[in-house]
Image (tube, rainbow, N blue to C red):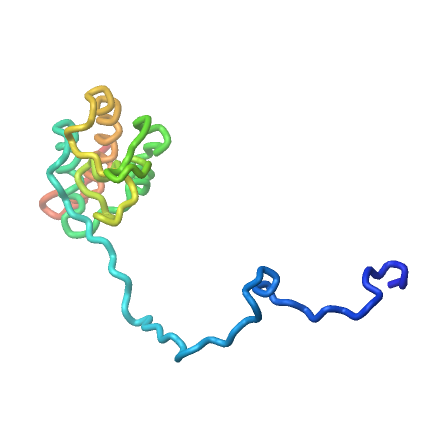
Length: 166
């Protein structure tokens, strides 16, 4: 650089850490032993639980899904929508959903169908059968039936032969 371009002509200040710039002082070495992480233990996964607080119009879809997923946990609701070729964005949505503590969240459609794979750890609102208005239920029922039908066609017939619908 040309000497005219340099900003400081006098002695340079020693470099500072980010903490020192914000008034926290120089960095300190950690105290105590280093943390020990046990990676052999897996985090607890939520267990899906089938429940009976399902609107009477959704009972048929619930039973179909329950028999389809008798031995395995159900997939996420968006996966079920993809399999059934139902656009998640096309589902009717309430204007606002709030948890009991006032937090705003989305509606858990899996719970409306009888099971949420996230259980109590779900971030969405678990609305039972009671608070659902009939107009909302009537808009949602054909979509739920389509999802349940997609999974009923994937099951095998009782005698063990594949079930094929034409």
